[in-house]
Length: 287
Ligand SMILES: [Fe+2]
Image 1 (cartoon, helix red, strand yellow):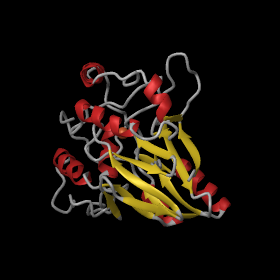
Image 2: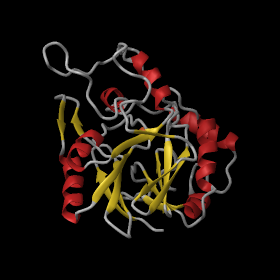
Image 3: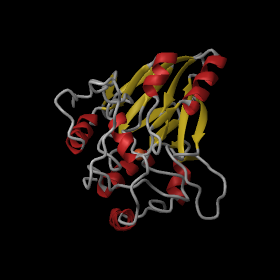
Image 4: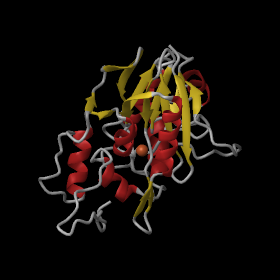
């Protein structure tokens, strides 16, 4: 079955959020939503999320799932905001516990921060399946960028998060805590083993040399032929050497510090302190 896919591009973080609908009905899911955040002022904004709310309400669709491909390090998730307005269950990979453990330590979270994934409604493992109306979704565990990364294969469409990007841009970085370029290579092979005509929807786009428009949809066949990092049957050794060298030159994403603290809580802010105000931490010399 071919789901109906609508993309929402957030230029501030180069993130693509998707609304995925069962073509036989009104059931839908939202993949990787964005809560706008201005770090300088510490203010959130719901413009991006409100565009998705308005779109879905206008269509009269029913949200069944709010799917996260991983704990994003470059934008805050709007999943709880969308859930309040549209319903749906928030899902992520079950290895979220590893990510929560790692960053629970980095941010010196107390014991009140649960590291069992219980902030999410559903933890998915490799091989799990779910439904959006009549449409079946299958879960691939595709770690490498982070330990908990998932690819959601829904009908003929694969939502790959930060694994493969557009063929002319290549792949996602593997240098965050718990990341691994060797693991990423193996995960990418799983995605490339899907049928050639499988539509691939990427989690980010940054344009690419010779391309001035943002793009987010490609296919498995195109990735195998054209991906600049893994196409044409590149070896694991070639990929790992290239990826590790390139990652060593990359700056941290601007919003990594607030993003991790919020996204490891399923998109919720930390609890208010005794004044009733909410604070995010900045760990000094730890990332
Ligand atoms: Fe990411």
